[in-house]
Length: 291
Image (cartoon, rainbow, N blue to C red):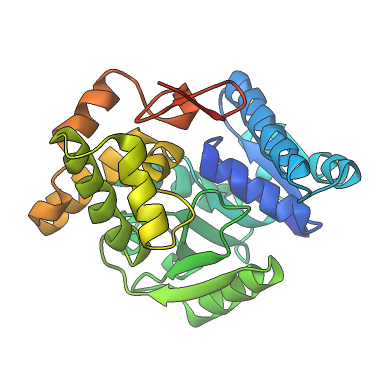
């Protein structure tokens, strides 16, 4: 087992952010996916994020080369076997996560950490398929992972104290703050922010103000760096819809019932920044353009 090697299953924005953050802290990363094309797109996404940091003087060209040199990709699961820490950041449902983490259970060293990224899925339920459920812990990162310093640590009923301790130390080594949360749908950050995003969508749908003015009012009125509609675009409207539906199903509270306008945009595949259009339009560089 290589103590400086971190394996990541998945190629989405959270997986990319984890890879970039880990590699910036002088650890080696190997990203796994069945699709070679998805792996190539993930590397492009990481490079794009680094280039944006360079534009804002957040990184240098030499740091970019160092980070990218520490990241490799593979379509062969066995290549992950020597990692000391495994991230599952691919499954969107409990069943998908169970299957993926079950695979990790069999290829990983018994001392390796197993981490699942989660917003609403139960660590306890997923851990039931493991030979040793004490190895599994959940982390909830906020996008963009490489910029947002807070992480929610989610302990399952059988997660061991040693697993929690090692995970917190790992996050500290990455320069991240963390809070430990009870296993409950949405945890803290998602449960608090989703009603704001959903209500902003209702205000827009009802014609009270334009998307630009809604975001301007919240940004300036409450000293937020980003308005709720721009934030929804940034997260991805498909993810926002998925999280709202999950919390509405679990909790049954009207504030989590997805706004019809959100459903409409997702049906039209206007998912926000990643597709170039959501509540706002964006160019290929990810900069907002006039509608």
